[in-house]
Image (tube, rainbow, N blue to C red):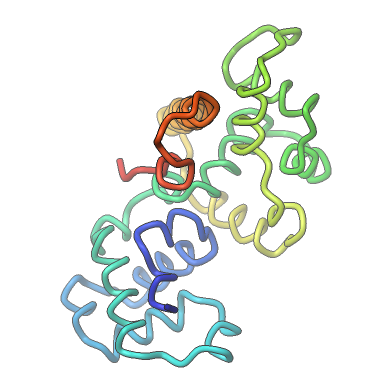
Length: 217
């Protein structure tokens, strides 16, 4: 069902959508009660989701209800003020790489990280975890770190990456926020390692259900 698109993880994984959503909520001064108005809710949906989606899929009551629930799960007041890397996994990744670890690299170097091979991901992992440059992590750790740092859309879709960069340039990322970005990124990778270890140990937990999320904080 199309309504399943707007599940609890939608804004965790779609950076462009949550950036556009926050911008619209602020520009239009949307409040919680506005979400209950279907006309206003439809306008929020149209402003948030890529136009091409609606070329193929009509807006139905079920789709609107699912979209409303995804917003209500985050709370409008919170969405208006939160730094979005506290919700969205992709924005966290870019903030970690381009503001915390390598704030003065050029675009080509960043894209090498987002498409990192084993040698590159080892370098970035050691830097994030404050480990010696010659540290050699085990295969599970390398796989987990690569799943955090590498992401094809950041390599293949420059507009998507620039949307995230423009958002990050527009907010204040001070030392306290950098500490959050570091701690959350480390925590996220450790969570992935835990899941991979469980899978390799034939634990009953499924990778798809246990994969860590960017929790609201």
